[in-house]
Length: 402
Image 1 (cartoon, helix red, strand yellow):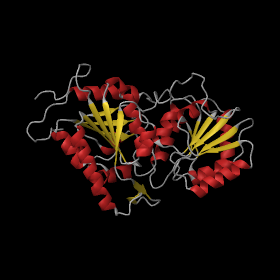
Image 2 (image 1 turned 60 degrees about the vertical axis):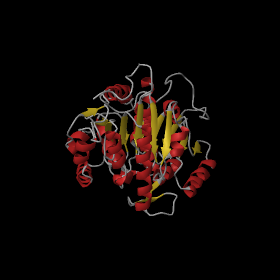
Image 3 (image 1 turned 30 degrees about the vertical axis):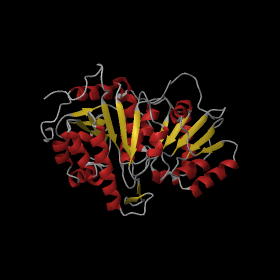
């Protein structure tokens, strides 16, 4: 077998990397893949994002990166899924998505295909694309975030989705975007085959940290920043923050996210209009600068937000979502035990409780983050380069063995 694309650093076609995320709720999956895509710039690769959140991908697309959009999905409060925009049932929508994904991979012919979270894609939609990629000689990676859910739920879903069989049949490596000292998802799932703990995808996300450039539109006074991620499930935190008293001399800034329901956004802006120490924004593209410039940050505790704040030296209070998944709670409590952040459980949340937490956050000692590996974005390019360098031409129509 011989290499079917040029070695890295030699003349000729650029290496190709495809990254898949299903993007049914929130912005977490595509934001993680965008961070990975940007980290691959030193490879000089063409990167194709396969995504159900094209607006987010297009707004933040790094140079050398393009995207293929599939029909969007939406997740309801009970964890059920359906088409976000089309009047189609879930099965019909998934058939379209699977066809688009397979066609994109077949035409793009990636050297490396990285699949986020679901080993067969959401409800199996990536299986055809994965088999096509391997038939063409691509290397394939399953990328897992640090925490999927509680260990019992994570193991149940892994067995239900035949995750072990998928990894054995369809993947060359599994990358865990975390640190096993925080939470060892590889042990929870009893993963076989090569498993690489990359560290958290944290350092490297904050551009020009420490250059003194404030975020666009930031208050002149010190500010406490509250972010709701995409915003689809941030109602309780938004209400508590806009009713809480800010620490003396500080302005509160709430960034609701694009998916907070409009009536809730209007209510938050109405409360802010009656206060001189509170501002509400729907979104800010330079969000990492807002983290770096804040006196303290309050967030719900999704993977990307935690990584971005931990890459700074800013105190962080996490109010984790606990339904339909306990991922954020598991992550927050594990990191709190290491001194990296503080936690307010959602059942304890309210304006008075948040007022006390904010005061403690501002007055307290700086967080301790030296016990957590935050350098995943520095390791991913080398891992990717090693796999790309080992890509081989297909032998007939047989897929590569894992």
